[in-house]
Image 1 (cartoon, helix red, strand yellow):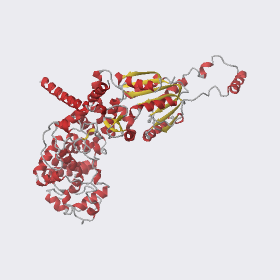
Image 2 (image 1 turned 90 degrees about the horizontal axis):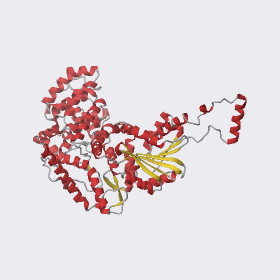
Image 3 (image 1 turned 120 degrees about the horizontal axis):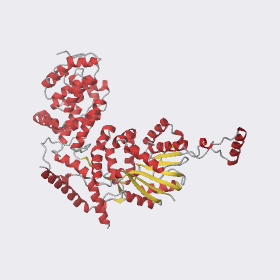
Length: 329
Length: 302
């Protein structure tokens, strides 16, 4: 009973694959790749999900996708990952382990998830920090000496003991709609003084060189047309000793989990997108763009090529997400 | 070595594109007709690989717009999930008209086929399927409708549109039906929904919508209409609910089952006809009064 059906379905699958491969072996040069591919005409083509489009179009189309989904972005993230994306982002920040006073640039950080987590983390650090004044007063200085010692310190150092560089986040995104959502969230959560929102292209950042301690890009780099340019810009804006960190969907290592993940991605996510956000095509693009992104090893190689040292990656949840990291040393 | 990596990449790509092929396979397994404009009986699928636009030189997404523009092929599992999700959303938030549409498209497979068979049997219905008239602002001259005399069908429709601020363009295109003819039947049903409102004399508030859906259930057999008619009254206030169960529901059932087949009427040819006369032609019993139109009610109770 099951055997003929299995046989029939495997024949169908074989049929599809062999026909498809036969058709495409001759078109190997046109196969989908993440770098520039020459099309028939002079325009170079790149991938947009499973479509092939001219490179100049990709930026615009990605812009439209995120413009459409901006208002429901957080809701859809929660629905699609059943809230697990919050754990991934928390883990990401704990891996970063920033100290108070860090200057962070969060690229493609539109709605501010990483930025706000970072600020919460350093605020907690601040309140528990070693340099906290409370812990120093084991021995009370007598009142006559206290005012003298404080004023001495202020006049000697040039800046008071409590003043050090404040942690600050520069959030950069190419899409104004996402930035607007992020701005209103920042106001609601009280982070407006420690964040600044800038619109800009990750391949050509409107920021000064050698300025930031950490550069993060969370779930944004797969949407960029030229990943190598993004990495070069990251290298440029980081201070020497700065860290590049990338959180991105990646390739699942376990074949069984991969099948489940693929089924879930292709069958369920576009339907969720249609029901919750009225947009099937954007979420179809999302799951396809995840498959088009280079594998973990390939991406680490690209990071090394951009000049970063100690480049490594870590898989989370069997490779559904991966954290890539490198230092500008 | 380079060709090996390319082959490897292609294989990986084809592995991931399994789902795209699965969607299209599902679509082709259902009966497909590619003859646009001719109301032919659908032909069984032949070798689908040549027909599928899977070549990488095509600029559009392989899979979208496969049978008609706006088409998104879906597997049976996706249709089920979409039906459940859209059904719940449509009840919770009836303003989401795209969810109502999606629910109708995903659950209407058998009903649409039955409708098409019925339309083919009727001469006017067959003509509609062949000519495929569309109601939108370019095919419909709103000012002309406004210039017609008072009691005509066209004038009533014009009043319906202008009073409620509707536009004939507001109906969403069909996306999830995997057949070209059936897609047109669904689209036609959606577009003449407003005409049903006019012919039945029902305003577009919740009560009027539920009544029209009840009549449509008998006329079309679409599960979406049946469920909307059954669960819609949940959202009615007590006054409307009372009115609905005592007066309008019996009328709607009688009217819906005794009227002529309303999908096979070429409404575009009846703009100048007197509304009462048109109703008699269609065997529609005059609606009971008191449905809430603020202007003078010219219809008499049956």
